[in-house]
Amino acid sequence: MIQPEILCQSPIFRGISPEEMAKLFTQIHFQVKTYQKNDLIVMGGEVCDRLLIIQLGSVKAEMNDYSGKTIKIEDLSAPQPLATAFLFGMQNRFPVTVSATTDVEMVSIPKPEFVKLLQMNTLILNNYLNTISTRAQFLSQKLKFLSFKTIKQKIAHYLLEKAGDRLQTVEIQQSQGQLAEMFGVTRPSLARTLGEMCQEGLIETDRRCIKILDKNQMNQLLKS
Amino acid sequence: MIQPEILCQSPIFRGISPEEMAKLFTQIHFQVKTYQKNDLIVMGGEVCDRLLIIQLGSVKAEMNDYSGKTIKIEDLSAPQPLATAFLFGMQNRFPVTVSATTDVEMVSIPKPEFVKLLQMNTLILNNYLNTISTRAQFLSQKLKFLSFKTIKQKIAHYLLEKAGDRLQTVEIQQSQGQLAEMFGVTRPSLARTLGEMCQEGLIETDRRCIKILDKNQMNQLLKS
DNA sequence: TTCACTTTGTAACATTGGTTACATTTCAAA
DNA sequence: TTTGAAATGTAACCAATGTTACAAAGTGAA
Image (tube, rainbow over all chains, first blue to last red; front, side, top):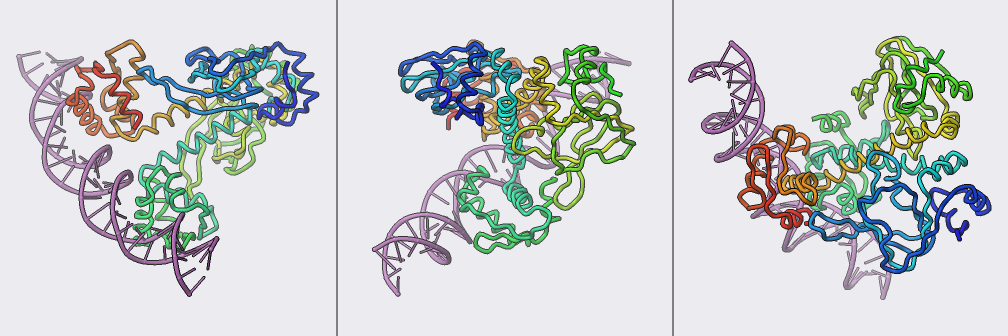
């Protein structure tokens, strides 16, 4: 019923051979459930006490807003796992409602069985720990970035980070527009601020190269 | 050399009896290192390939800004673990420099040995997974909150979240000032916006009770 | 009650950044 | 080289929010 050669493509089982996968699954309890197009798979708010991996087909995740309307959050397809962030931790309920957008096969592993799997196989354990740790690190970075209020601060942080201790000059790969989007600001605002920083003698710009003239003053910006 | 009755207070080992702790530690390799006041324990940028738990004393974590000056990030004391967020994941280097603020005893468990521990003991595994998952969930919540740009949106989100599906009226415990701090805005701005929302017929305020008059319209605010 | 202290409401003004529009520059394909 | 599309620089204007200041209301203790 399970298809080891598909499942081992999943981030959680990466590096496991299909044979090994098959063997591991003989040692735990699990279910393979099939759904037809448009079937409800998980109701938002339901307790998340099992790991779900899409083995076949694709699903959509939607969230109910407070007035009952639904907003689509993301599309997922085989062999991706579902809501790995909510299996453990304080808030272990599905934040989203999941339904099938094609015919779907879903592998469902109860939480205690998945814990067994983690204990049996070091690679799976490492994969899973890496997955959620990387996610936390990513969120943390993003949060730090958002904590800078003004565009000037965001630019200063970005440039100093990119330049490191040594370099004076930073070359940016993205276009100004992409950079602006990353910063969560509009392109004209970013350009305006870059212009201001030039006038103030903080930086010098030349095409896609930005030279930092006064690192100390840039740091001051980040502290206030 | 290790003190099981202290270590089992640590979030990672919560629920483990001191006897069991002692037994577990006979099965893995680890070190107990002692430091004197002001000794350097971890240099920022160093690879994080071991779990460090403070067994005695307290330490401070500092970060170097780009010009070389150091900023204190936090104080930690026994029996807290260090930088659990960086043992796994893509970015596994210490982001901070750690030094002793008193005489310190530090239990150092190499990553592979800690993985063994996770595989030997289900409770430890669950504790650790819960710790990092909860952290990720917390960050995710915070990020969602910050994604609302205007104060009106933040208020709407906060109230709708607090009211849930049924309630019409929300009672807030904190003072307006504390609420404003939570929202990352100034108190007068928050008060002003609450006033505006009253005038627009969205809410009614009476002391610390806020009545939501039009949930649908509030939801509209969050979408734009 | 009265007095000091905290919380809340509000207003004037300054700053930041979004919006829109347009000119200029760059760059690659014809 | 020419030409058109994309990227960039810039300006005028507007909305949102911070800043500062002060008055009004609530609150608890003497």
